[in-house]
Image (cartoon, rainbow, N blue to C red):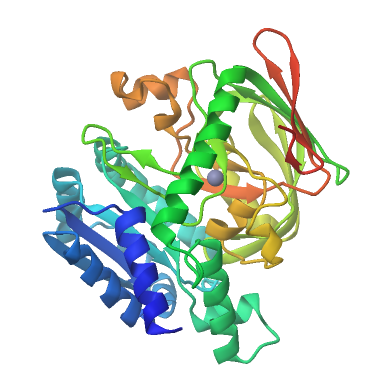
Length: 410
Ligand code: ZN
């Protein structure tokens, strides 16, 4: 990728994604193969006045070795310096920047139960830290092309060409290609998304009913005091506007825990814990996933919904038109950041407390009691198809067509 294109992308990440402010700390998580991009992001953060940017290098190879060679006991022990790090995150609310470039199949061959058990064991240690800083800091997730990921997306291209093709797709869907001013493009995009959410919020929906020829027939309940959100968000307390996902095309909300009935069929593969789950269905009863089937990765899917007592309940409902810019690229990214923004999706696990109206007036616990789910996982899976219809039922008893043949009906 051209240096000037990477530089432009780095600026978008620091300015629009994280919106780094003067004297803020920044934590940058990025793959070891992305040295040049990392350097540009660090530079752009300092240009914006960052106090200190710390880089944490990720490596699929090392992660895999760690899971294989360490005992469960060792994996689930938090050493003092890692606890201190969690306390630093709570005290300073640094901007978190995550650059994803992992191979979607990176952890294939690792004992999935060991990974799941490790996450379960670490959760109670990490949760109090997480709860203390929830909604208070800026964060952004973006992508970067690595050879392993690119070969998964473009298996027929030679490595160099595959990486270039994936980069082009990333920059295009991030509104950051040669032809556009990404900062301006994102301002406009956020305005458009805000119009959609304003309309959805005005409907005062009680439930959504999904039907599709693939067999999906599913109903989910929505809470009265919970908003639809999209695009940029503001931090709690400091009111700094940032974009948690680049790209982002979805309008999403947190559904009512316990209110989901029927069956949904996946329309894209899901990369979970470094392994793929493909062609699957999930059946819900009283809000909970009670039956799953998958052509590939069924065991892993079962691990996922049984991660903890709430991981079988939904945390997110998101609407994305079939005609979205990402879906129109025709590329299957095998990465949730992109694929979730190409199709309507649901997420199992943790809900979004910042969807609650006046969420600053409630404690995390109060919002969980209201019906916002809490879990150690939050996993998006795609159910949007080209013939998906969604009918919304409003609280004053009307039926409103929300999606017709895969796209917005309004
Ligand atoms: Zn989503």
